[in-house]
Length: 174
View 1: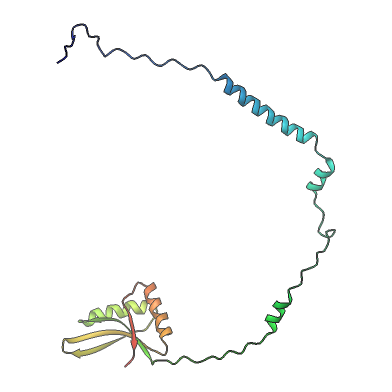
View 2: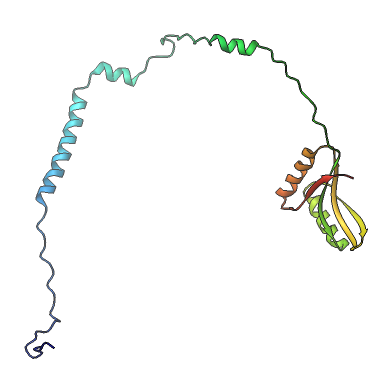
């Protein structure tokens, strides 16, 4: 083990001297002054040597009556042919699969079904409650419809979604 001289050791708690100040950047100041002076000279030069006719022309543009009337470009021939062309399209009616019904809930109690029916009424639609009896007991189903097309049922379903009523299903009406 190395020997240490603890008696002649100088204390580490001396005050640190601040670093010496850097001299003022004279070169930087000279460059900034030179740039500002050259910019000012450039502005003065442009102002004094401007063409008076060009300045007057830019200040007062030519009135619209004096401007030349440009001829409108004529459309290409194929556009005219497309517009005049008759198209024979056979439109087939899509066969509907039958009337549709939308069911939004099935509850054990009549009060819960009435609550959902009221929410649907606030959305602007009319619902009905059907009581069905099965092997599992009595169920109260909240239904809307019948709808002639599925598109009408989807439209009402989207209305209910905007009113935060989700979980509605669309089925064929039997």
